[in-house]
Image 1 (cartoon, rainbow, N blue to C red):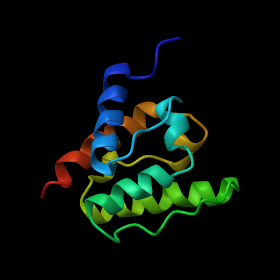
Image 2: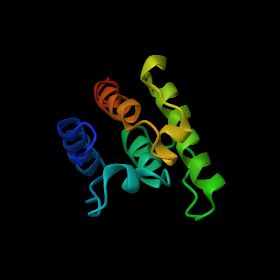
Image 3: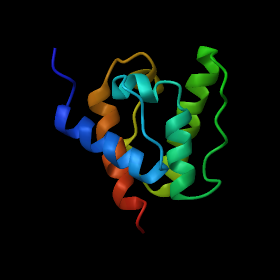
Image 4: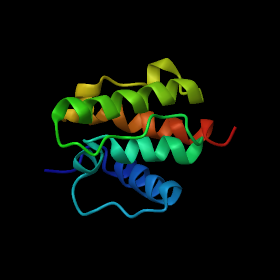
Length: 112
């Protein structure tokens, strides 16, 4: 099975690694982002302190809270509302097609 949005996913992965300065592991992008810690780190690299520090808890509600905190940070950073996604889209791998445009729209607002 081909990766969802293969080109977009590879671009998003590369950009996240470049901004955070950390290489992601060998799992799918969804699995790498699922607990929200990478996303919170990404937001804070763009604008220090714009996102609550992520919880490292393995509890699902804490991981979903990390994603929610990231989405709040995206709003603060100016990501258009239509480029946000529902937490379950990422956490439960329901709609990576909604997650990838969010990451791509974060790029331009990070340079303003």
